[in-house]
Length: 265
Image (spheres, rainbow, N blue to C red):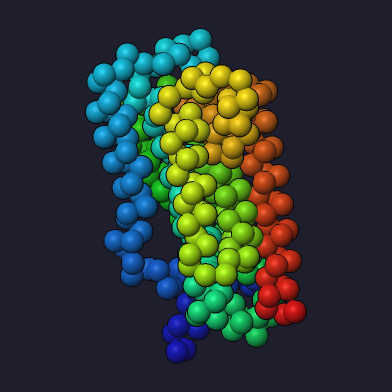
């Protein structure tokens, strides 16, 4: 127990939420297969659809320049991977800890507060997502799917995607009553994954439907990652950055309050 305590204790001066991050690391450090699946999923999509289907597509025009289909799909898989990782960590895992494991009840018996719990879980999701994104970026580089030095900012961009989704999804999880409620999560995530300009351009849509697609958070993440890997960065890119930052901050605010109500109210 003395060894475990020493491993969990963060350095002096670190945020209290890092204690929860350290706890999650210890709990998952032997789950290498589970960790690896999160990295392999977007890679398989890239090979099957980006490379396989790409043999049948000449390519798409992005900001006045035609790029091959794999280079069009790869940044979208990067953003979708960040979304899926964040959703997985902030929904099923948080719900189990909150309703069944009662982990947060025990955590609040320490100096940590509900806001520390929220920040700790979101930080853990971002760390995992950051590792996945860095690995996927290396795959893209090896395949020659990156055409700009702006791509070095792709990992921070995916962290923004993860921040937005993990904060909002964790807030929504505090309202879940049973496992059946998670059907609504899949009902929202899957259409976004398929139709947020991940596999074909948003110009495919007309009228109000295009406005709906452009308003989804995954679309903002896909556009931002695609602009960075193709070098099409402009002032308009800040719209996506601002969108994801505000989404994350609002979610963090709500989940901190909800955890306080559920655990201390």
